Image (cartoon, rainbow, N blue to C red; front, side, top):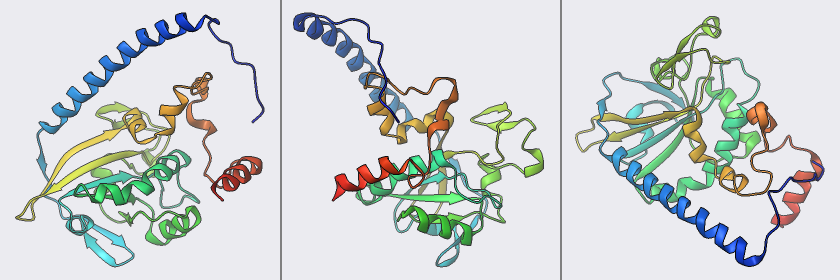
Length: 248
């Protein structure tokens, strides 16, 4: 991507710049306090007991939902968009996973297991996972109701029809949809669905936006949204070489 001229508001003195930064900082701190309050409100959100016996395909064989917890009490499932007949996973979900993959070891210290679940058969998942170089556990919900019940898949013939996603009836341009669902397992082995987030709520898991929102060009997406995103091995070779060189 070539360099381009950035339109900026104005150039000011250092004193004016610091004053403007302090004014914006006050607003940022107010937003931080609002986020903290919202986080506390989420902790009081009601739970829903999971009654259905969901079974997943994993590299270790068929496993019930309870086994996906991996000995933890809290389970975060990222609904990764990879359909049964897709050749590759969703680029945007891949962007999220690139950033979540290193988090797993840290989340485990807080009694959380992070798992990817997709509607594709396990063999297709394993092939794509190997290509991307990820280590996160990844299970297949193929043949179960899990993706349909959590409204992240619809039947292919219903793709262009209205359906429920993100708690609203809408048309979505794919039969697979992204999301994250949170579960808790108590000492008696009972499992509860405690939260789900979809749509732009998933931006919290894309840390690169925190940087893009602070550089002069911003997200620079316009009306095209995330169409710029590619799998990390499909960007222009010059960018890939530059990143690899920086790591060595």
